[in-house]
Image (cartoon, rainbow, N blue to C red; front, side, top):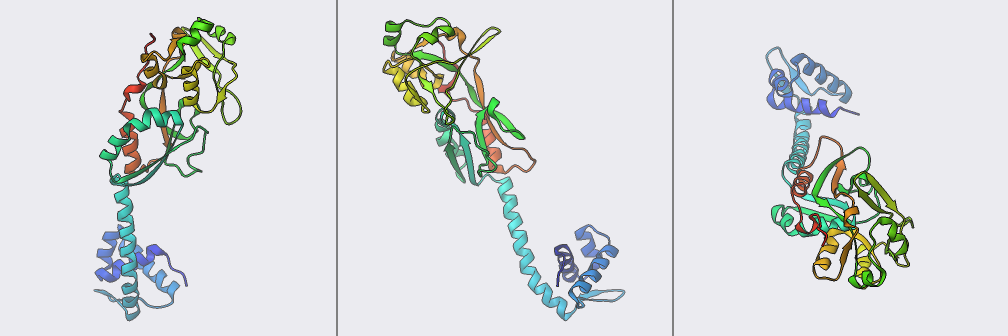
Length: 305
């Protein structure tokens, strides 16, 4: 025995209102279409559910029994849909966000206290991962990356202030080895290498007017941890290519000095991205709006000294 859920819902409205006309108005169908659906349902079930006259309609004994059993089921469905609508309209529930470690430290961490105050009903899980992942396949609601590494078919929104990459080293290192005046000079220096999970090292990017360069630097120290490389630079181990937000306080304290400031690439935004589609939850909308309009002070463009 099978029955269409829409037909069962239609029967429940006819039986409850005891009127094809009223039920048809609620369901936004014609009375004749509704009558046809009820005859089809009775045929499928194999029992008469409604008594019909030219003036009235009422449930049979079997119809009353079916109505009693259907009513709580449809109320439960309605309640479940109301809760889904509540999630769509009210920021609440759990959000999973995948971000590279620099974005977690420079963009997310400074804002978490304010986020928690603004949206106490949202549980935000931030996973720091420098490896590119498929956020849909891995169960994330959104991710943060630079524009060049975004997945296809995603909506992307710039967030935070543009981030600046800088070149820096300890004053003692420059005193001992000289300060490079062009990117080509780096080939004669000990450069601290950022190594990806693939095993490849990051090629340092530079630009000046119309000139753009990717320099394959060399050095005896490599790591996937930018903070480790930065500390190595502070300790005089070599030259570091890193985020201004990481280096600025150490430059201000005299532990580091900038170099090649006229060759630094243009600042660029991180992008918060999420699957395209119309049905965005209120929680994800809150996340997008919150980070879109915040510019952490420690990630404003660095000024060479």
